[in-house]
Image 1 (cartoon, rainbow, N blue to C red):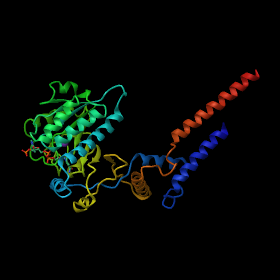
Image 2 (cartoon, rainbow, N blue to C red):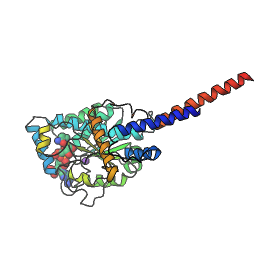
Image 3 (cartoon, rainbow, N blue to C red):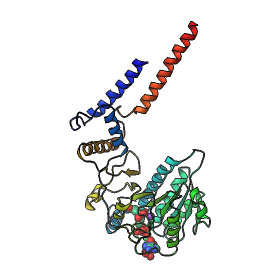
Image 4 (spheres, rainbow, N blue to C red):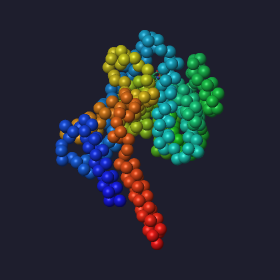
Length: 352
Ligand SMILES: NC(=O)C1=CN([C@@H]2O[C@H](COP(=O)(O)OP(=O)(O)OC[C@H]3O[C@@H](n4cnc5c(N)ncnc54)[C@H](OP(=O)(O)O)[C@@H]3O)[C@@H](O)[C@H]2O)[C@@H](O)CC1
Ligand SMILES: [K+]
């Protein structure tokens, strides 16, 4: 048993050293060894690192949108389908993490505004139903454009109720929604929210403590470049920026995803922003806050960021080092210990 425990700790030490060798050995001080190092490693690992995102102004976002449709000739339908799919994927990601049981079907309320941000919500609702969720749409100011009429029909064909206004019992039942999607206004919002969205936003603000609110592209009511300058106070827990975060996202403190994986590299260069590195086939990537480290911690955080970026562009695991956590090793050790003890107990019984 002692030998077994020794081999466990030797294996942990070896694995830790391998991590060390994987590019940091020259940069980390030698005294950071043993358990202290392991604790520091885990602290840094749970504070994911990433390079600072780049932001688009409202004007640049609108110009880029127009250029995508004129120059490479994307249709709005194409872009909206990908944007809405990205929204659905981000919603699915956060809802699944909190899902109490696979038997409980998550119910999502999608509130759609009059423009294309609202269209993203219609697309997202359809995909969420395809992912196995239940959706209800609130769509008070409906566009008469054929594309939007079609999107609405496609939702209804999936069994989604499309309401003209907020459910009367919204305040009492907001906690029943696994998420509320705010696809009311995007990068063309300006001024003060007008009827009926002013009161919808107030109701949403009151519900934000009891429900998970996910905003699409811009938290509705926020100035696109500056944030909540109107003192409106609406603060969703999750934001999914499309193409690239808008200026207001600098003020956003919650979980932040980016989606809209469709921009050709030359437009990225022209509009001076950086597309995030999307992992594998994913339509979204979650941005992690850049930890404010100094000295060796900053170097180690930079190393982790580099490594994460390399791994994201190469989805396959490149080493076995990360495969087995210390928890897994400890569980294996306990299992081995139990088996050894059971065998010696059996042997003793046989002797008697
Ligand atoms: N390339 C990308 O990343 C892609 C982005 N996409 C998505 O498109 C979104 C931008 O869409 P958008 O331009 O249609 O504008 P959006 O913000 O939805 O709203 C405009 C509507 O709101 C209204 N309105 C404005 N202010 C108001 C107020 N104070 N109170 C009341 N109403 C107000 C305004 O009315 P108006 O003022 O013109 O009378 C108009 O009807 C973008 O954020 C992203 O989600 C994808 O779909 C495709 C690819
Ligand atoms: K929004």
